[in-house]
Amino acid sequence: MQRRFDQLDDVWPAGLGRRLGALLYDAFLVAAIWVLIGVLHVAFVRLILGLDPEQVGQGALQRVTLQLALLTGAFVFFAFFWMRGGMTLGMQAWRLRVQTRSGHSLTLRQSLVRYVAAWLSLLAFGLGYLWVLFDAERRSWPDIASGTQVVVLPKPDRRRRT
Image (cartoon, rainbow, N blue to C red):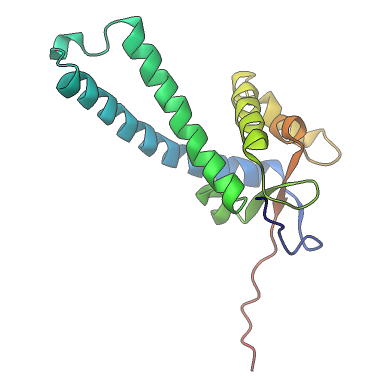
């Protein structure tokens, strides 16, 4: 079930700098997930399949299964956070949230479309993210493809109430 976010009137479209900051932060987290997946894959090949060390990584099947596991692991990371609260850990650090145009959390389908469009944006030498500089609404290709938007959240009010 989609969650309706609050503070919809207090947010504004995210610029390129914040997006890249969150992307870099999340890249470190995804790299750590990929290391874990790689270790588990090697352990599976060695301990369960019983292959010799020289055979690890040999053959198309091992490479394809590892690549699929890495892509799936990254998707699960992003989809979990986007669907749950609209923010990955990197997005939280930069006060960003991804939401639907109507202010709801993403669906699984929107998360998948956004994830695939993000990879295509990166493969196009980052053009999909640079698109933010030219779009009147500061949308990237993943935003446009998935019907979502990345917004900046206001700073929390730290004044004490008496």
